[in-house]
Amino acid sequence: MLLTKVTNSSGSIIDLRYADANPSACAYLGVERHDLVRQTYLQLLPDMRSAEFFRVYKGAFESSQPTVLAAQRLRRSGDSRESVAFRLSCFPVGDHLMVTWRELTADDDALAPQELEPDMSRFRLLAEYSFDMVIGLDSMGGISYASQSAAAAFGRELHLLIGTEWQARVHPADRPLMTQFIARTMNESRHQDATTIRLTDAGGGYAWWSMTGRRVLTARSFAECVLSLRNVHQQVGADQQVRHDAHLLRGAMNAAPMGMALVGLDRRFIETNPALRQMLGYTSEALTALTVADILSPADSSTDWAMRFDANTSPGSTQIKDLVLVRSDGSEFWASHSIVLILDEYGAPDCYMSHFVDVHESRSDWSDLLTQANGDSLTGLLNRRGLSTQLDALLAQVPRTGSLVAVLFIDVDRLKPVNDLFGHAAGDDVLRYVAHSLNTVLREGDIVARLGGDEFVLALSGVSSASDADVVAERIHHLLLAPLTVDHATITVTVSIGLVVLSPGMDGAESLRQADLAAYRAKSQGGGRTARYDTVLDEPDGVASPDTGPAPTPAPPLGLLP
Image (cartoon, rainbow, N blue to C red; front, side):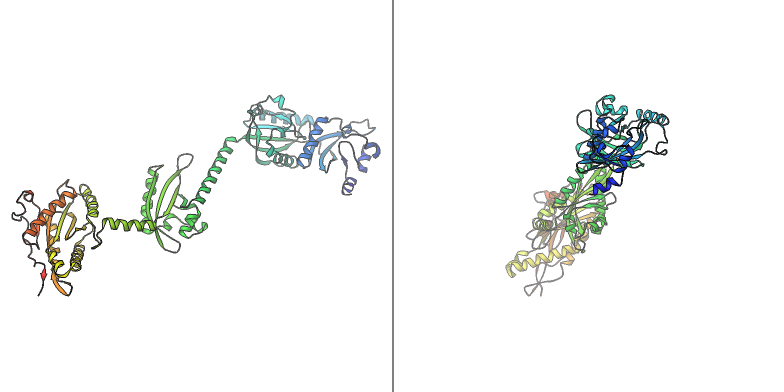
């Protein structure tokens, strides 16, 4: 019923062999309806080849879109005059093809074929010398014109391309897009924006092409679709590779248990993964509004800048440091931060890839282990191992700074009687008391350690002569004059100090040996005094020889005060 209403109100012919015709079609053609339905459609189109029509017929059904035919001429029954030109359109309706026509007016036919021919000649001349491929399509989707570049692109001579179906050269997945593009081009006068499709190439595969289109008038037909195509296969391949790599990177970042981020050269976050957002307590939007400096403790911001400087000066290297990060709630924790510089396709710095690993617990555990390995549990000072490491580091700075290092070997006098009289707990109190006194005289850059038993070492940095070390030694003696109460008794503590100023090239072990010899001399002379190292101490009776150091300040022996 709907089809009948449509056909009765328009000039329409239905299907290849007429299944029906409306009154206006019968009147215009000068035939009765019962005579018209016995004829085929092609009998009224003397200028149209059957192959062309079947191509249009097939294309209309495959695309399910209106297909506009070029201007054709209908033969009127009994009319000896030249046939009249019409513009025909095909519409698939169920299993039939509805064809509508409109008689061309003087305005439609204003450009005569002889007037259009020069324009088409100029157009084809330009196309021949274009780097782009130019294809002309007739109203049935056949190739009516192809520029020279098409022969190289498709690996066929031009005369073998003309008249073939254009859609056969389009990748099957792109054919619906191609059909829609041609329909828009033929039905709209404006230039069609670029669309990317795949076409067959000379090797039998497919290549990506960027395509634009425009409807033009031709000398032979009413309208033709002209396509301008540019090979963008490498560009599309590169873009696809970039998207693929970005997809893999994003997938790896999202699945990574560690915090990861792409950071701009200005240290602003570009992209972050869920692990980092959870670690810091930020949303994705909040974190990308921050810079790395916003999540670092102020003391570590300069370290981060130094890492980035090293990454820029050594492309491909990985910079790793333990830094203190600040969560959104203000709490702090230790994290291992690694930075790698990412270069763009031109080799210029583009951004940084950063990794963050929470090492707060492991660092605390490691710190405890270091303390246990390098520290003295009784006094909290360094032990012999810790002293050896730090003393070697201090001596390594001497050639650069030009300053001297002095070592004081400190031996507590007569500690055994305290242990025997008051117990080992009292002896431990004495050792802690001495350690506290040594910490009191400690300056920045100095090192203090307990070697074990009643032996301590104080390494002084930046001294200019042995006299500077003598001043520190005298201060230690003076501090220890203060009485110490142990187990309800008051005692005095004295120490014997051996002093050596290290000569250039001397290592830590040798300095301790010489200072120990000097301390032994001080103890052999009654204790409570300081003795300098002298080469005479290396002789068999050297320890018993007179001290060459300054006269010590007398100190009372360790014992009970009245």
